[in-house]
Image 1 (cartoon, rainbow, N blue to C red):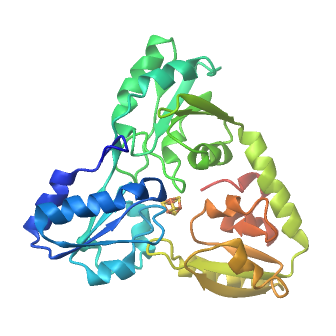
Image 2: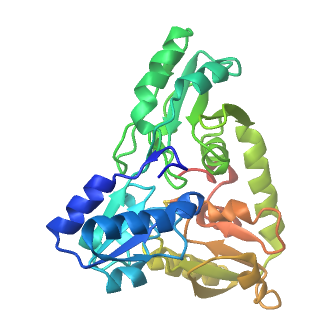
Length: 330
Ligand code: SF4
């Protein structure tokens, strides 16, 4: 595992396989670390003699366990995420006990990028959050900020394992009184969502590149207000039911459909595994706009696209069940 600065916990994997006497092992890795999949499979097979099957499907979050692969292996190692109890209520997984989560903790020091971020932090009280990859370094980040005169705090989601941990669908850790948010991690997926759902300014600090990105709450929200405004004239809606193992929320989809019909709108339930614009385009002559009951962050991926995709909360604004100001409440 030389190419990535993550802890793949090979020893724990081997222990689990031996303890369960597993003969067939599945491994499921996020896109970013997939180049190491074959090396990892070789290492597991060499140390245990087990057959290893690599999942070639998506691995977006703990909600996205490869349930088909799970059915044909004795144990499945799912990398890069922690178990999320918030998904349990509508999980399609039938054999959760066969899934072992490997968090992929990063070995990169966060202190240099925190020092860089201080130059961009304007407020006195800063809420610090991160993904599971850097969560073990949150205390160090907080004390580094304190050394620079900042009052650094964090919150905790009741659904997640660690204080300061966020998911794209759970930003509860950032819902604390503060002037702005410091997100430690890579990419724009989490910081853009943090800005959108908290309405605050977010400084995103990437410990791998030592680069910063800034996200403004109002700017992120404006994009969504425009999307909702575009849907005000729509008369036919496709209510999407996510068929990934932890994203299926049939009750919510049925409720939204019923409410739409009561308002005199047409609504259809559409079940999908992967929600892509190409798939939605197949309905372009029948459906004016779609409503997403799967991963809430998917909605934002469609902002530049041809097909309009709203969140459930946004759709409630359309059907008069929610005020515009309450659109981002979760
Ligand atoms: S529902 Fe979306 S944001 Fe939540 S864990 Fe799954 S992929 Fe991540």
